[in-house]
Amino acid sequence: MEFSTLVAQEKLSEILTLYPVARDFFVNYNLPDLAWNRPFAAAVAALPTERLTEFGMTPAALQTQFLSFLESMARTDTPPVTVHTLTILGGRNKSGMPEQVELTIQAGQTVSIVGPTGSGKSRLLGDIECIAQRDTPTGRQVLVNGNPMDDETRFEMDGVLVAQLSQNMNFIMDLTVAEFLAMHAKSRFCAAPQAVCRQCFETANDLAGEPFLETTKVTQLSGGQSRALMIADTAFMSASPIVLIDEIENAGVDRKRAIRLLARREKIVLISTHDPILALSADLRIAIKNGGIDKVLYTTPEEKESLARIEVMDNALQDVRNRLRRGERILEK
Image 1 (cartoon, one colour):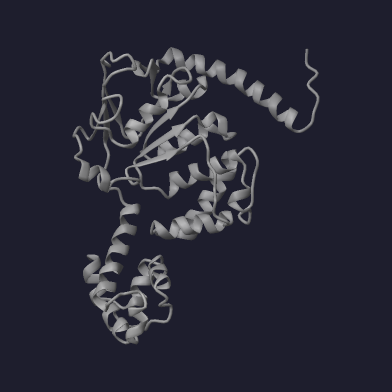
Image 2 (cartoon, helix red, strand yellow):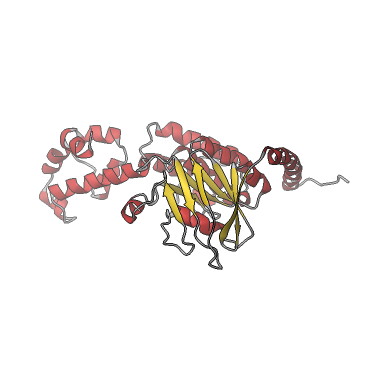
């Protein structure tokens, strides 16, 4: 049922049952006491005129605003397209030399982006985030399902098609973890918000190096805890089919599990990293040099065998880190 039909025919109480976030719309207009057992038009018509003129609104204008509110909230939950493939067409490096590359990434694949600091890894993530159409400094073009996108479609999908987890996660809202997750579940029209919030919280604690409580303020979370919370949020609540991650190894989270969690949700995951374990755990890796894509390497069975040995060494180092954090002495010779 379209929103216009829903608003015209159904009682407000039914609409609020389907979309609990809609109550925020009425609170913003200081209308917490409507006749919820009536359809929108009848409930608003029963109000004194001054209740609407206070906000410079008429009943018709308020209904238009309400429809726009519902539609905008729905867009945050459902991507405009189903992404099966993402194709990167080469542009140029910092010297102006052309990139000889045409790379197609499939849904469910994980791609690592490697290269020295300052080589252009974040620039590639930026091109993908904005679905570049030869209009960025690199001159690259990004195709979705093999097709370019016009500006109107790109702007419609802003913040919906691509989710990005940056190196720095700083919360400014004075909310608890439970309140933060509930707000996200509500705004994204999650079918079972309480269950999804619980799943996000438990997964975030599994990913984080140090556990936290649902009553913990998000402003009090460490960098690793914040990143773990947003990874879980992205995996279970975000409808974005493309996820970009910038240097997760600096966050103090279970990085391999985080990547597996996101990839298992049939998302395309691209991660900028200096971590050999993450680089080799991906299906393929893009090597960046002098601002351009230098090589595209698919992970071989031999590299997977090397990865197993590297993980043994990494686990030994992680054990030393954990013992140091617990205040123990390291006495092995």
